[in-house]
Length: 485
Image (cartoon, rainbow, N blue to C red; front, side, top):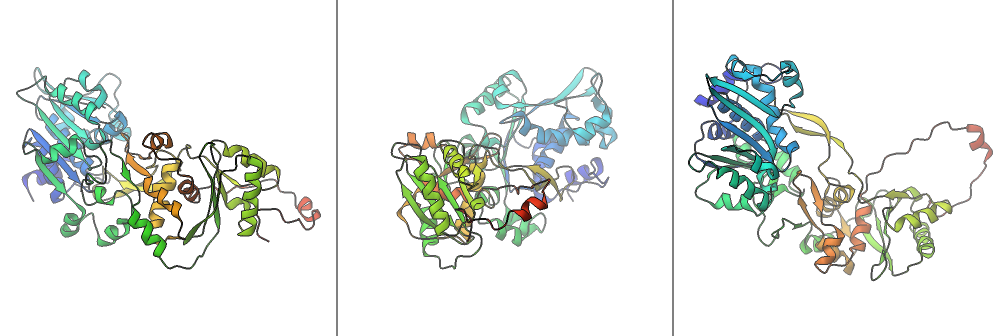
């Protein structure tokens, strides 16, 4: 055990009151920040390694020991608050940090420890000597005036906002410190610092953790290899220049993925779903894609502008392919709403989808930054909207296509190779808007969107106050389009 590992174990405890023992890579992160081993640090480690916990404890220990001002900066204050929550939770773990903490009027120590939402903390080091830790977004950097900065999720801060951070450091040209920490989501200033010899680098990928025997297994690596961002989140690799443009956009699937999916030999099985993208006019097409759990094919495409005729065709296709009405998915956010209303008037109640609506929140496992080596369930979403979730989600189109999906050969599957994605400043996955696609000469991806619609997450509808007599008196109901029969 190193001196810093022993120091952390003596000073800090997890939620269960047990000493915190840092792994080898976590200790590298802690010591590099707490000891300020170099004026410039570049830190990358795989997801769920405990970087937030290690960095938070390092900043807390340093600020409680020396009269320094520290700013924790991220793309927004919520992101910066992740590391600050570690600081809040561990101030009172030991007499050293607790005795130097200066509470503000009205502060309740137990509330700080429990809710971890204090954004500014002050310590008294000696008479007339004080230190501070506070958080903010990169856009607010010029108003901070801190010579020591920890830039969390640094790659998600664009070059313009990062320049404000560098200008703030310039106010203390002789003695300043910058730690960039995060995942290689963009080829921006974060890539430049990775190649800059002035930066001390700490890179800890999933294979190092596998070799170390903690926080990683081969099963986790194998299960996550097919997901988007695997190279970034697990292997700590920057996308190549051919994979990512200057704005951080990457292509979701490649022509190699499409070719492999068209050559794949599988039998269709599972529930039939019909995805329908309704034309917005002009040269845009109506498109219908039929998908089972293993197979997808384009079953219709035309330039019809009349929503009634388009609705009739939807019902015809549903009857032809034996698709239940509830398994027809139409984007209701635009002109598709008119077709949805028409279908409802005909007794065909389809599933309405809105690409721009919020993605579904799920109880997902995330790092418990306060309890090293463990995770916790938390309701959250990784996606900026429903469209991003349908395309890039763990149960979305791209994962299906790369794993089990069979595409019946069709020229318009090439549209899938024009779908781009990236992480925004909040760390959420975003799909390039159609308006931006048009600016680079790409028409509306009608077939691609029709396929994506079949991956919509829908909630089961629960009906209440059912009258059995009404149901039993109804007799045999006639078949209506969209229902199997």
